[in-house]
Image (tube, rainbow, N blue to C red; front, side):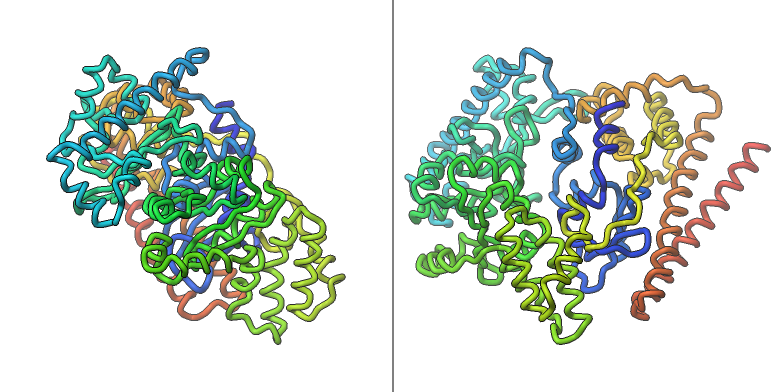
Length: 589
């Protein structure tokens, strides 16, 4: 069994997604509010038996890997590493065993050389004037620029590459460090161009990666180094090298979201600030801070704070064996804005931070009428699973008492409800499924794999447009291979694009024995069959949701929207079946 299959076998998609959104049982599925678009009524469904999810509001779906990728805006490799860590599975790395330590030392050196190159360009080059203007506009002092070693990457394709190769660093080392990118045909060029550069350092002050902010209208606005042997975004805190002493001395860490937030905080004397670099706070990041302090406060806007409170932080509190607090920011403002406008306001916000579970109570009950049975039941369903996750007996009892008082019900009744929550089921409805989801013995998809084998072994099929889309591949590694095939022509180029954990699967597809007759027809039929399967699965899900919504009293608008979607999918399916019939007729002719 490969590493990816082992991860799939050991994770439960309901538990994975339940870490990010509140799910409630709905027949054989779970549902909740979609995290990818604003909605008041749940249209996001999780299917334990298929280990998949789908939102009927934004029409997105996939498996556990695709959910993590979309939710955290990370690539497949980072999602795989996160889920593998949860499952206790070791995945392949990009380096040979036994030489990693030496490789890492070389990568630290090349990163440091790159950081110095960028820094010198910002301070001393005519090309860096625009970046200097930007830092001046943000109010950064010369000392701040020096402390954070800010830099500028030139608006060219090979400036850094030329500089480093002239100093005896190899292109392979630059690729491994994520400083250059390999393009089509094997040519390489600088990853960061015309950007304000933020060297990212570990707690020892060693450069592990970089962040770059665009100095024009190009998108994305921010670009980070990819996952490398040194740089793991989920296990990195920006500014930790400069904040560690203040965190120890003040016995508190303030976690913000972005580079600018950290820099502005430090420049104004708040040296215990670190950033999660725009991602949700992770267990790895909490683990880094735990060595320095057990007191942490998250500075997040109101929406993010509520989400963080509801979905993640109790688990981190268990890791810390301490409370985590939340600093609620004014709407539409981040720490950078608040500190620049009025330092005292920032100090007051920090001083008024509240335990995040208390904030969760306020947020979960907002808008509920707690004088009604329905309102009380909703509050119980939202909060009881969170209380059940608290490991500390005293704190769990405290919040159970608080909930009982809030709902004006007996603690004994809530304790009985709490006892029915299955251990480890985080942030779900308090009812456990009657039987556990069976572990699937195989995760293969023969039709997907046959189609990929055709494409990999016969590059000439690339010119044949059959309307095949990545969404038609349910298997995540198959989808990754297909996307890489769309961007690359040769197997070796595709291989370099993929995570090492997928290489074995790629090789098996590329060497599978296939008959070489009627290739175009085989590809056309295969593409149609994948689309047909995708549409049939979607039809089944729509029908199931329609039945559930009808039983639970879904609104007329919601039911009408689902019916319209079902009609559209049926129409598309009819067209696919007609195409298949024509194709069979042509092949017989």
